[in-house]
Amino acid sequence: MSAQTLYDPRDRRLPIVAPPCGLVIFGVTGDLARKKLMPAIYDLANRGLLHPAFAFTGFARRDWDRSTFEDFVRSSIEKYARTDFNERTWKTLSQGIRFVGGTFDDAQAYQKLRRTVEELDENRGTGGNHAFYLSVPPKYFGMVCNNLANTGLTKKAPGQFRRVIIEKPFGHDLDSAKKLAHQLTSLVDEGDIFRIDHYLGKETVQNLLATRFANTMFEPIWNANYVDHVQITMAEDIGIGSRAGYYDGIGAARDVMQNHLLQLLALTAMEEPSTFDPEDLRIEKEKVLSAVHIPTDLATSTSRGQYTGGWQGGVKVAGYLQEDNIPADSTTDTFAAITLKIANRRWAGVPFYLRTGKRLGKRVTEIAVVFKRAAHMPFDNVSTSELGQNALVIRVQPDEGMTIRFGAKVPGAGMQVRDVTMDFGYGHAFTEDSPEAYEKLIKDALTGDAPLFPRQREVELSWKILDPILDFWAENGRPDLYAPGTWGPDSAHQMLGRTGRAWRIP
Ligand code: BG6
Image (tube, rainbow, N blue to C red; front, side, top):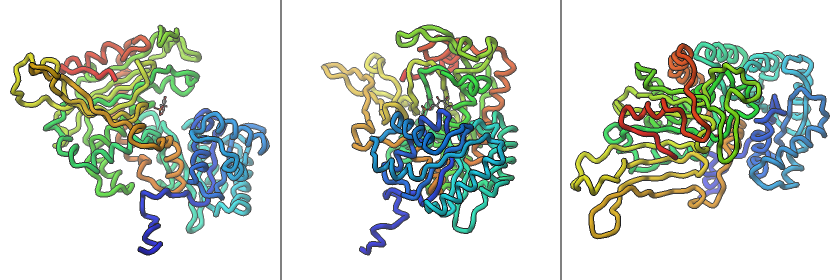
C-alpha cells in the first residue's frame, strides 16, 4: 500500500487539522467566549488540531493592549480548558494572539482589525483565511457584518476563505428570522455563514446517527409499528443566573426548543441520508421538519411554566420573578412542553413529546424512544403486572451513553417479569474523554466541514412549528407555576396523563 493510500485526507478516522487561518471573536470578554470558546481553542491547539500558524484576535470594547489580553486569555484557559495547561502549546498559541479595542459600530476599529488581519497574513502565515465569530447579541449581527463588508474583510481571493460564525437565537419568530437572514446574505454568501447549534457538536448527538445508521438492529423497529412515543427532555437544575437581559422575553421555548430540541427531533426521526455530506443531511432534516405538525388543541397538548422560589438541593433559591432585573409581571416561560406529530408513514400517529426547563429535578438531556407493548403475552396478568414498556434511551448528558430497558424473569420458582436495564456508558467503553461541543464546531468551521451547522431553511421550518404555539401562549394568560427541583407544572403531567402516558423521571 502506498503512503498516499495510508494517509488519504478523505479518511474521516484521521484527525483533520485546521488549515493556517485566523479566528476573530467579537464580544470576546463575554461569558460564552471566556467559558467555552477560548478554552475550546486552547484544547484544539493542545490536541494538535490547529495549524501552528493559527491566530486568534479578540475584539471588544476595552482599552487593552496585547499583553493585558494575553493574560485574560490565559486565565480563562487555566480556569475552563478541558485539557491540562501546557506551556509549549500556550507559547505557540499566544504568539498568534492579537487584540482590537472598539465598539461594534466604530469604523476606525474595523480599519484596525483589517490591518491586524493583514499583519497576521504577513507575519504569522494565516494565508488570507479568516473566520469571524459573532459572540454578540443578535441585534448586532447586521451591524458587525456590515462593517466587516465595508472594510473589505469579507472579501476573499481565490483559494482563501472568509466565514462568519453566528450563535442562536436566529430571530425570535419566523418573520424576524427571515429578515435577519436577508440582511446577512446581502453581506455574506449563505455558504460562508456558519450557524452554531452547540447540541450538534455533542458526541452523543452525533452517536445518534451512528446508532441508527451503522447498525442493523435498531432501524427495523424505528417506526410507528413498534414505537409508542418519543420523549425528548432537556432539563437544567440551574435558574437563569445573571442572564436576565438575554432570557426575559425569550423564554425556554425560544431559547432551546426552537434549536436544540427540534434538531434532536430531526436527527431522531429523519430518514437515512445518502451520505453525511452537509447537503444530504440537510435534505433529510428539512424533509422531516416540514412534516412536523402541531395538534389542534394547544391548551391540552402544550404546557408552559415559570419557577417559583423555594428549596433546591438544600439551598434556598429565588423564584423567576424575584431574580435580578426581571420585571415583577414577566410572563416568560422557564419551562415548556409540547406535543408534536410527524405526518409521514414512518411516524404516523406517534407523538413526540418535547420538554425543557430551568430549575428542574436535575441536569439531564435524553431522548427516550418508548416502544409499544407486545401485542400478545403468554403470561397471566399478575406475572407481567410490573412490566413497563421497552425503551431505548440515548443519554445525551451528563452521564453520556445509552440504556435499553426490557423485561426479564425475576429469579425464583414462579414466573414474574420485571423491567431491567442494559447500559452502554461512554466513560466505560472508551478511554478518551469526549471533546467539548465547541471544540468540534470551531474546528469544523475552520476546516469548512459543514454537516453540523443548521441551514437557514431548517431555522425557518423550526420557527414555523413553534410560532403558533408561542402566539397561543402569548394570548392565553400567565405560565403555570412550578416549584424548584420538580419536573415542571401539573399541566405538563396532565399533557401526557390524558393519553395514559407519563413522563420519565430521568
Ligand atoms: C444554551 C441556552 O443554548 O444552552 C442556555 O441558551 C442553556 O439557556 C444552555 O443553559 C445549556 O447547554 P448545555 O450544553 O449545558 O446543555
